[in-house]
Image 1: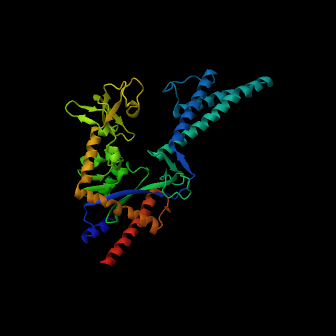
Image 2: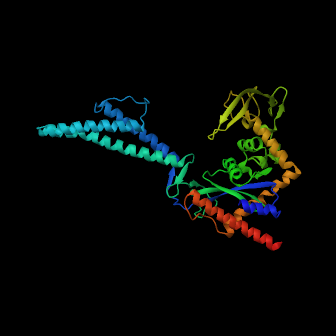
Image 3: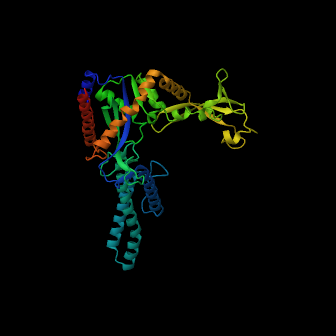
Length: 409
């Protein structure tokens, strides 16, 4: 891919001005019924621990084993479960000896009956330990994903566009990300997470470390637009993102701009730091707030509250707060600045022209891959092998495009 791109630049087929990024999901060569779900493992794991703790409490209460000093008062861990089994083995062994030396039939019968329950609990505990170890192995394989396939542990269950069953069923697959220019795939990688938003940063890292230095403009659709991605491209990489965000097209509509109840349309007084609501009341700054997403990214908000929402004629349209409470709004200043920056870039004649090339640059590559090469499913298992297969398929698309270009020339 590096040599092919160098040849394209040498022949001036591409100008290395921008890269166009997009992704598609390709089904893995895995059994779609061999799934392992993270939520199910966590649910069963909690139930298993609770069951083991109840068994421990029963054994201590009946004085079958002595009380132990547990790390946590309300629960029990795997190491402690193993220790309980060991103590239970000792207790059962003592019972076995007592039965063996007893001369009374009735007494032996009573002792066997007394031994029955501890043996049952020991069996359950051993099964719980084995299941706990199994769940831990599955969680280690899963890492940060929400699922994986037993027949291809690198594949994650996700929703596919090519739903031949027409039932919306999740299937094991890979999220394939490519970077193109001139309808040529210049770089690619496979990711386990189905959402494009979380793939942009690691994909750009892969391009820089394994393929080539990033050009000035990074172009992608709204699926990649987020505060974290804008910060990474603008501040960390010192490049220009031509990436829309989720509400970009909606905000361009006349109906949206004229909606008085959209906080984006409220008048703002910079000197005194307040907004004016549709009823003419001040929405005053109250405090700062932070929110951390599951990836650890922190967003900062300024929280404003209306001075008085009582008897407001627009309350039912504007406010969802309980009666007696005032309307509150959270403003992410950085996000608003980023959106303004993106709007300015896309409104500019030159950069807007580059962004308009996105659909005709990156999307046809996936069209050629799936429609012409019929590449809708991997034939190998494991990310390493699947990545090699995807590289061969994308290079086939590149060579076909290149031969058409040279034939025309």
